[in-house]
Length: 383
Figure 1 (cartoon, rainbow, N blue to C red):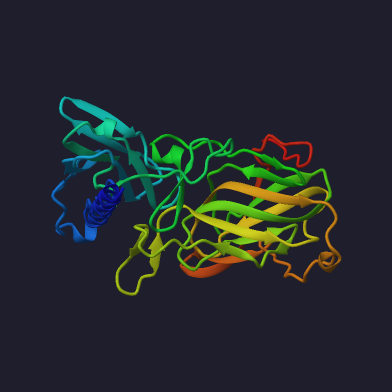
Figure 2 (figure 1 turned 45 degrees about the vertical axis):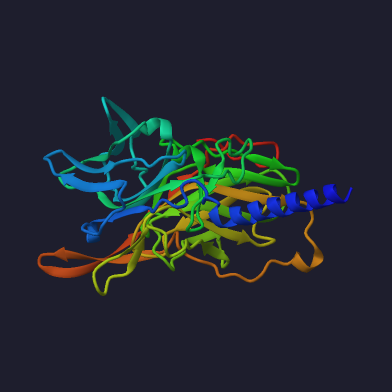
């Protein structure tokens, strides 16, 4: 019996030493130890890791090309490609993988009619690469639209999935949540209404919609029930850091409008020349609380306007409404400012016979009646 006890004790120590030794030699998660590759047009000579490079650009009369040579390292990690680019009013920019004897279009068009500075992230499967090759961005025009490219080998984890987000959601290191359908190069799924009991989450407009100081937008949302309070949400492009759009409900300015600010390591931040303001390219979520008393039974008007001279683009505009009686302490709506954005007049200089003359020009209001399918609670009229 004593011999068996000693033998078991020695075996226990052996397993313990093997386990302790494995702590120091355990491999990092797949893709974690592979350094990322970052190329920036302002620092195009910076070195790249051994699996990427060199980068070259070609200018043409009608098409321009940006390309990088890739030698995928061993493993099963996927390649995340984030492209920051200038988006003109027309044209296209497509992403192509060119390997040995084959060519695959990963994204037919990066442009989303969003803003002059924008970004997209693509998640590229190992099967699409196959081996060494070239990652190419072809764009219309004489100069390449590519400003910055970040390449990283990642192990994506789905954050959430359901009938409203069938392709799942992904979280970036900078804290942004990206829908899976857009990361695979295809178009995004149309946003859908969600019935959550006494809370209705309805789509006012799927967009994209251009808005500027001279072209505000009014969404019309007829509500069949008795609304208590609500929440507005949209994705907005073209907002500079620190800016929020102007939003009003039934003529009352919303004071609780907030725009998300990604981590400063997000590639969408671009600094211009000395003295110029910081810009951001990419979609950002904007949310606003609609206090008790602003929403009403029947037709409701939701006004959006850019708060600066520049234009913004909104998409996936949603209105969440809570139905039922509000508590007594919330029964009276808070005092809010009465804006005059729709009827405001802007003085613009006009040259008349060499003399600068000021004329009054009214803002042009765009009326949107929503793309929601409607429901028995919130009936948004289709266009």
